[in-house]
Length: 171
Ligand SMILES: C[S@@+](CC[C@H](N)C(=O)[O-])C[C@H]1O[C@@H](n2cnc3c(N)ncnc32)[C@H](O)[C@@H]1O
Image 1 (cartoon, rainbow, N blue to C red):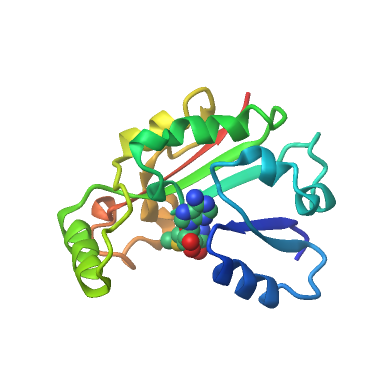
Image 2: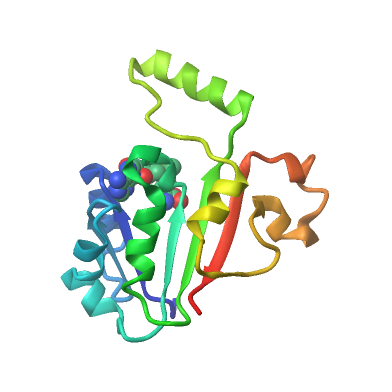
């Protein structure tokens, strides 16, 4: 693989398993860190080894921001990365949307494990807010199957899939 990737997770067992899988891969590393701490992540030894931070790079929040409540200000978290990245960098967001069935599923999960579903579901307009100040790439913030319209037919009602995705480029 030519791409260089730094994976991040707050949960030590996830980061440890990831690091084991990546053993021997000089182009990737797994960091145990909090996504809310852009300074620690972008300033880590792993980030400095993998990336030239003066060159554009992509930060992907793939089903991560839902773990931040509104009071933790996810828009500010995204901005804290954008402010540290050079022009031409990308931010990608994938986020579960507000959906009754999904909310019910999370409720079932929390009853099974006795924990509250510590996630916040957000619609596409909230993802648009998180990409504020960036040039949003086509097709915009849309349900995730619409990023691959050529796969039409594989997913029933693709425009109703409760997961939104968007990609923004720093001008
Ligand atoms: C739904 S999974 C998505 C994982 C991965 N991004 C992917 O696409 O496969 C969400 C992950 O976010 C991690 N997580 C939750 N809060 C976090 C935080 N504040 N910082 C970093 N990771 C966090 C959880 O431990 C969990 O492994």
